[in-house]
Length: 439
Image 1: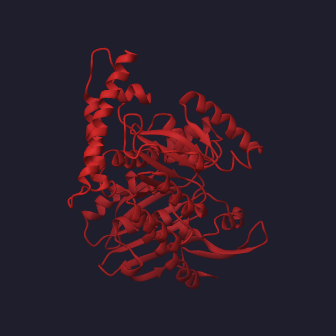
Image 2: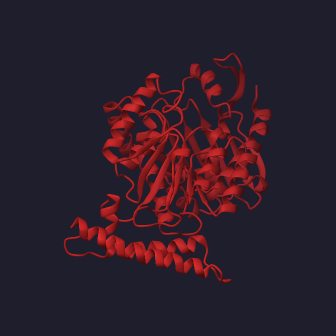
Image 3: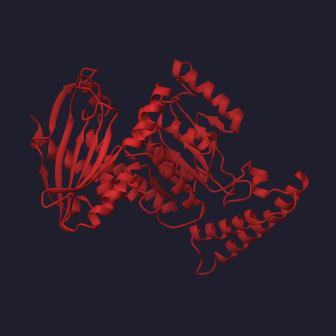
């Protein structure tokens, strides 16, 4: 069976190489297909290979790539973090656990814990986990992108299209995005907010557009059920107002450290998810804002001294309403200390001053699951359990989109264009609201 598998793989590989050569020749014609279009042709060929079955022989992709579910998008993860604490680590866990059927994690790049932080206690925990995963899954672990090679210019039987998942420090993202594009990645999944400033994010977008690489954003609330349900309710009630509520579970005495650690400010950090919702579903941009109405009764803007001794001005909570030039009204209420149970989010639809719909996450069922899982594994960040399915959905949407060679982005998933609009709104609102609300 092994010999038959390799022989079959060889014949199909020859067919794919012929197709690639044909497309390259076609490139001299004025009607040359786009890179995405060529990818779609090859993906179709791969799918036809997957659908063929020979007696006693597994599909060739299964034989060569170790999978059992067919074609997958290869993923390299940049910025992992310590087990049970880092967002990148949780992405890796879901990929290695097989939660994302359309993706295969090939490589993890962790600069700190495989570099200067290797001898620290968290570094040793990371090394133990990395060694175990490398042995179990064949995943490569390295400290630098310079150690990574993407050999295939087009997807082959032994290597699918590659997407980079960047989940490191926001300040490193501009450099990392250009590096993974130059490496040959066909798409990038970038964690929020994407970059420290609008200017840097716009530069990243320009580079990706120039190279024809799609950039998707990890805004999980874009695909969360409570948001989708409220959108349907608002659509069914013209003239209604939607209010997005977002509560975290900080204590008042923890705010000085919180302000310093999240020095970019609440609107670029905690509230950026809601601003991405406004950009995605409500068309809110800086140019489209008619008025901003602060809510002084709800809001609290403070100047606090952080652990370093430096002062930081930010919101412990902020509420405001945006009215757009095309007649839409949306409100936000964001509170860092608004929950005593790990945090929650709501979408409330009102009309004529009366609430007509409310959806919340976690709902009672999900809260029960999160509570049980948190008790069983108290070292794990609770929000991993809360947003577990959202993260899977985002990775499935993006990797499937890449595999199928589609243009644009999956429905509802934020792109770098949305990220730019959201970050612009955050930079526009921050001084405006601070001036109105600072006591």
